[in-house]
Structure formats: structure tokens, C-alpha cells
Amino acid sequence: MDATDLIEECYRRGWTDGLPVVPPTPDRVEAMLGDAVDRRDEPIALLAPAGGVATREKIAANAVMAGCRPGYLPIVEAAVRAAAEPAFNLDRVLTTASSQSPVLLVNGPASGAVEASGDWEALGSKARANATIGRALLLVLRNVGSHRTGGLDHATLGHPGKYSYCFTEHLALSPWDSWHTERGLDPDRSWVSVFSAEAPLTIVDMGHDNGAAVLRTICESLAIPGTYNAYFRQDLWLVLSPQHAGLIARDGLSRADVAQHVFEHARLDPDRLRGRGLYGYLDELLPPTWLDDGPVSIVDSPDRILVAVAGGDFGGYTAALFGSGSTTTAAVEAAARPVTTRSAS
Amino acid sequence: MTLIDPTGTRHYDRPLCPRSLGAEPRIGLVDGTLNKGSHWGQGMLDAAEANLRTRLPGAVFGRVSLNPLDNPPPDLWAASMATRHDALVVVGGDCVTCMSRGIRDAIWAELAGLPSAVVCTAAVEEIVRQVCDTYGMPALHVFRVRESLFGQPREKIAELVTPYIGGLAGALTD
Figure 1 (cartoon, chains in turn yellow, purple):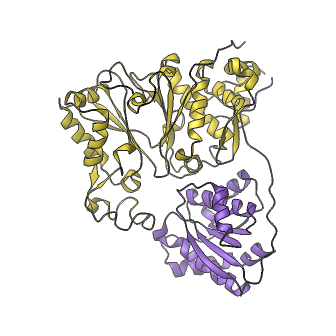
Figure 2: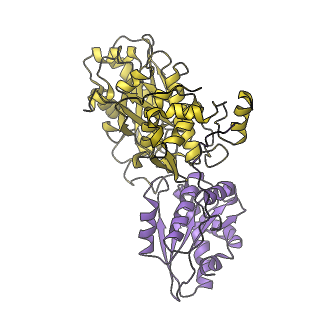
Figure 3: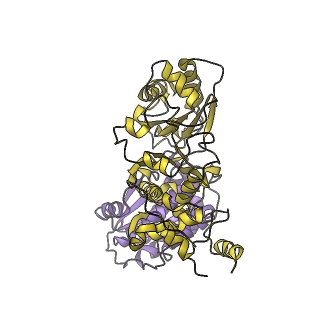
């Protein structure tokens, strides 16, 4: 079999996400495992909905297929462990009809070690680490958790983030410390956070030079009735461009202040919720008095909001990653150092 | 050329639990629908209860309403059901989310020793089959309603469902 035949064989076996994969030959998988090759059978996580055992070798094989370099494996492993956390609710994430996909935020030294990008195209198609680490997680979920297109995944529409959805912060241009440091986590250690999110909603404000105006645009853009957040009021990720973050910070606001401000101001009047979106669909699942006290915030606590800074140095944009009502953010520590790598023949 | 298998799919076939309901079985009727406002769940359970009252005259019924977006550990959920019920009927609507949870719950209930059956609509038939296969219990009793329930009132839903669940009592007892 030549290289093309092997790629076609992977399609034939149903292992791919629709894009071609790097065939997981033994030498490539061993190279991915590096000095962990002797621990290849170690179970890393049990993955819903099928209860598949994600051993280190299974994860490595999917990382190979995604196009990862060997040094990425500890981050992929951490992402898999995060996705298996109960808070993430993998079983629902992989079987829901709603259009959501796991999104990864990589913080700490590991993001630099693998050259993950928080720069231009942070949420787009540029850096190999972003593209392949995100893809590797999704392939693991597909192949080990039985998350197969046409199989258990029955998202009505899906979204392009189902190929890959992974980024890191642009700390060089961020006015604040990294997200994990501000959460009190050791800045010298690496963390991988996962959340199942809708496709990013881009919020543009380039007409103002102050943070208050930018936040007003953001809050008003977030307060829309056709989201799960409007009803379930669970987690929300906001990815601020350096320009937006800089304007807001210049007004003296911290990252926590941004979350508090959004909690207080991204609110929907009950009349904008009644008769719209999920209203009526969920009536017995929501508290009977949830609309009795006036405008309803899109989150039930500022702690629900993860604020990150990423993107190029120009552009007044914020990306809102809405949730789905069934999943919250899970974060786990990644291995302190990348594994030693071997060369694939 | 050998390729390392990246899949973790397990192939197994779990049997149904033994059927040995007593004369006065406690039957849990589980509304697993997300869209409670549609009354699909309650309408389907009305039909199930009417069917079982006829065929199991000593049965005692209790309704359970759950949010299919919640994700309790399935073994603990099933153990909880087993303290209150001797058998379960789980229903869901045209909803992939609620049916995948409902099928999972029914399978774990079987594993906990509770004879269980699922009522769904034909719209989600494929996902139901796949979830049964995924959880390794392809023989789970599933009743498929080949009528559209969309927009129907509760009483009409029960009427539409009734012809498709004739074997419900047998599924829990035989």
C-alpha cells in the first residue's frame, strides 16, 4: 500500500472526520508516544457515550491521524482527561441535536512549547498546534467515544469547529495575566480547559476608543433570545481581541470586572424571552419564577464567564462562545513537560 | 501495512435481566423528554399506563420526570430507581438528546435488575438503534410510534401511541 492507499484505508475503516488523516502506522504512533511508549496501554480516560477506554496508545494514534507533532501528546491527553470530567457532560455533548463542539484553551508553558498561537487567526486556521490538537481531541471522542458522523453524533447542523476548536491566549498583547494565573493556578504549570460551545459569534466595535462603549456593544450583542444561555444561564466564553481588552483595561477594569459587568448588563427583558427561543419548550425545567424579577442575565453568576484575550494586534472584535445548557467548563493540569520525542521513519 | 487501531469501541452483547415481576409490581413511568411543554412525554405515558393497567391489574404506577440534559452517573440513577420501582417504561420525543439519555437509562436499569422498555417515535429510530448497540444491549425492548406527534394535545398523543405498544406488558414480564 502506498501513502494514498493508506489514507483511503482510514476512510474505509471510518476513522476520519471527513478530512484526510495521517495513517497511524506503528512507527508514527511510537514516535508520538516517545518515552511513554512503555506505558502505551495505560488508561487515560473512560469516554462516554460508549464507555470506550482511551489508552495512551489510542490517544496517540488519533493524534497522529490529526497531524500532531509528538510533543503535543501531553496536551492532547490533558484535553481528553478534561473532556471526561463530569462537569463537561460528555455523554450529552456527543449525543445532542444542538450544534456545539468542544473548544480548548491551552494555558501555561506547554502552549509555548508546542507553539500554539494566540496571535492572528487564534480561532482560525493558522497554527499547526491549534489545528491538530483540537482535531486530535475530536478524533479521540469520535473514535473512542463512538462519536461518529452518521453515528451517535446527531447535531442537526453542527459547525466548523467540529474539525478543530483550540486556541491559546496572546499574553504579549494582553493587559492582564493569563486566565489560569488569575484563577490562582500556578503560572509555571500548564492547564487545558474544555467547554462545549456554539460557533463563535463575532462582535465588532471599532468606532469607539473607550472600554465602556465596547462593553456596551458586547453586552447588548450577547443579550439575544435565541441562545441556550438566555434560558439555561450557564457558562460563556468571551475571547477579547487585544484591542478590545486594551480599551477595557485602560478604563481600569480587570478580567474579573469584565465578567461582573457582563453578568450585570447582558440581560434580557422578560418580554424578549416570552414566546421566543426555548421559552415554552423548557417550561417545566426552569424555575417557575425565573422571569418574575425583571431582566434576566445570560449567566447566573459572573463566575460562569471565562474571559480570554487572543488575536492579532489590530481589530476591535470579541468572539462570544455560547454554551448549550448541558455542559460547563472543565480544566485539568497538563503534564509538566512534553514527552521526549522519537523520530518516525 | 499495519495500522494502529485508534478506536475504543467495545463489542459486547449484554442480556436483558430476568423477568420475574410479582402480582403488584411497582412500575416507574419515566418522562425523559426535554420538551415538557409539548406534553409528549405525559401523553405517551398515559398510553403506557392504560395499556399496563389492563394487562397487569395489580400494578402500582409512579411517574418520574427528569431533565435529559442532566447527567447523573447512570449506575447511581438506576440504583435509585430500583429502590422505588420494579420495572420501568421510559419515553422520549423526537429528540436525539432525550432519547440517547432515555436508552442509556433503560439499559442501566436492566443492568440493575429492572425490566425496562422504551417508547420513542420513528423519527429517532436510527439513533435509538445506535445507542442500544453502543451500550451493548441491542435486545432492549423499544416500541416505535410511527405517527407524527408534533403539535398534538396530550389526549391525542395517547390515542396515537396506543396501537404501537401492544406488547408493552410482555416486554416487562416475558
